[in-house]
Image (cartoon, rainbow, N blue to C red; front, top):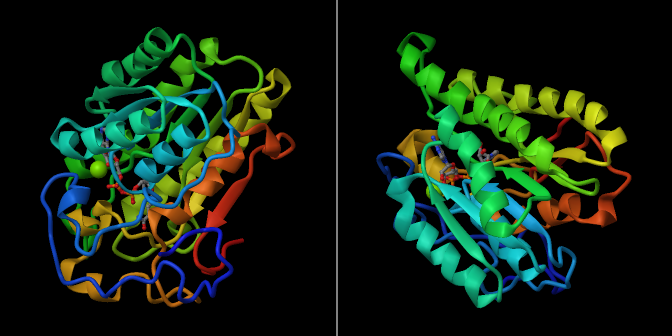
Length: 297
Ligand code: NAD
Ligand code: MG
């Protein structure tokens, strides 16, 4: 079994069979993804690093957000899980795993590109968990387009709202509730530094997330609230099979990394745990890259 504890060669660790060409409509479902992604379901071991913490996680049903939810729960946090209504079966599975870890999972389906809903997520967390001290923005939209001419205004707008506006709305709404010691973690990408020609709009949002976070981190540090970012490289998730990549590119997905393979969501969760816990207390405004060796500045 692959895990994060056995001494092993990272070239082989979490290596998966080559995926077939596949395409899913909408946000995509983990349960339709082939081969299955590894979110640490069978491997992540908590050590009480987030005991009693209260977290809002967007995009928590699948992929990186699911791995973060599993890890946070096993580290002792109660969670509000945000996802799109179409993703209910995936969210139910995450809720089951969180509950199995002995923590609370509050399900909050809805569209974070809608300001009212995004802000309402914070109120849900405060009401249901009795407070909030971790805000983790993982939800994201990525749609590949060969030519700029093919990106519609609506699609451009939705990518901006999902990836940037939602983060702004959620963080702004959360601030009055966040005690000193709280952490905000946003999700960028290697695309912020090394953008693909077919992801112009998406890559732009990921650079914006870095800059937003670095500015805000300095503003909030004196209040004892830390803002940091995780920037993944290619990770095997439904996002990639639901229009994030051209289907015919999926068999070679992630092979361009120096490790020669894509990452699994399970490999991202520890970065979020580190940035959430007091262990990283002197780390502020940082982007932690987890890219399989793809260089970043
Ligand atoms: P994923 O599809 O599993 O997760 C993305 C989630 O975003 C979805 O599950 C969905 O719940 C949520 N979402 C999208 N639009 C939404 C909306 N309008 N309202 C509410 N929720 C919405 O894929 P993932 O790869 O785990 O993506 C998580 C984050 O990681 C994204 O921000 C993505 O940009 C980033 N990222 C992924 C990769 C990768 O290779 N997979 C690389 C770099 C960065
Ligand atoms: Mg999903």
